[in-house]
Length: 302
Length: 136
Image (cartoon, rainbow over all chains, first blue to last red):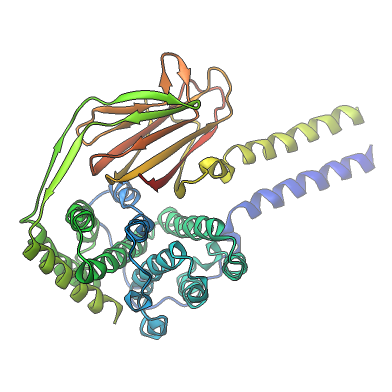
């Protein structure tokens, strides 16, 4: 009985250790923080719940990159934030914002299956992630292995996206929502900038419309950025994004609801949607958006 | 006595791992040709009176796949409803008392949509929604 009790204790201890290892927080090692998060934790003007809802609603830049590829647009590495810019990101806020930027770039690279370009972006995200203590959610070794095996694009896309989501979720559970807001804003801005640069060279109706609909995301991102605008860095971003909003304010989006139908196809439920949405955007407005997005993006990455 | 203690410990351990598996991300493997976007975790407190609610911007020209992964236990099924920005019901995975494991939504209207998830009852349910997309 004595031996068996000892065995039971060992099992329970093993379960306890396994449970403890479930959260990566145990591996978390505090590093010296940079000046922009040390003094006073910024209190947002809106609830964490609203911030979380908005962050969840912002679409992945993968969708935009997929649209570009499916429309026959070729890959252009010049559209990306150069990986050498990493040396410029020396505060937590710049780091968080540019993790988003580089993640959007990585998504674009992955969608185009240009894995030879992926490595420096993977390294940058890992390095910046480590700097703000979320690098443990970025499975660099697996991603590196996948990036060197050109047959694993789907897994590469899945793990990259999943890792980004985990880094974002971890920041929010640790009440570091302000960094999460910056990551999401950076990813959005970079994804839209890539699309804008493509639209500048090869405009087409679908892309123009898609960029017009970005008004919805911009409005939402401004809500969460504004929540921290009392901070100097956030105040600066809000000022830049507000200029963009002024251009978008001239664009109208309309929506008409029509009751959808449903049908079963091979055991799956498929919705037959008849609702419609339209966006009114002129060539001149598109040009203004392209120029302004590029200006703001260049300010933020440099 | 030894046997009972051993069985008891085994049950504790196995229930822990079964629960861990329940909320695993393996659901994404059912996405097929759709590209993974998000996993929406739905904890066991989310019942009809207090559903899990997330918003997402769907874009026209994309088809969205929403996987509803649960333990397929009668009475504890995961119900998912999708509403448009005006809170009109667009899709549900429970239709005429039948549960569907996924919803495919070819989007024709860009906008914010609400994805509401809840369990039928609280008999220790467990599940996730996984969202993916492809170009229509």
